[in-house]
Length: 58
Image (cartoon, rainbow, N blue to C red; front, top):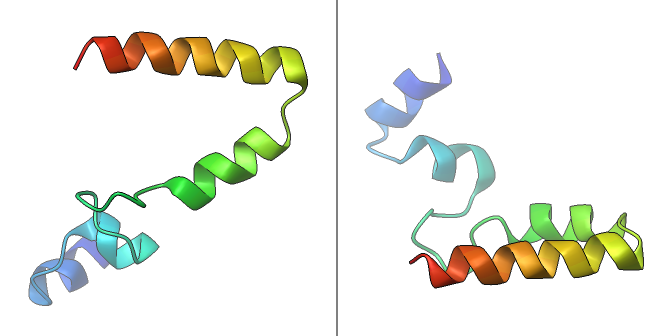
């Protein structure tokens, strides 16, 4: 149903639901910040290492 509304509005579904365009530099920042806030220091370091690996694969 929501996808149909987004299509009628000619809007990306993700943008319609989150208010942020997938092409935006702020895409998913709020969600990521909320998750990171709940991690301990060891988990944050692991997440940073994973992000570095993902970035290398671009």
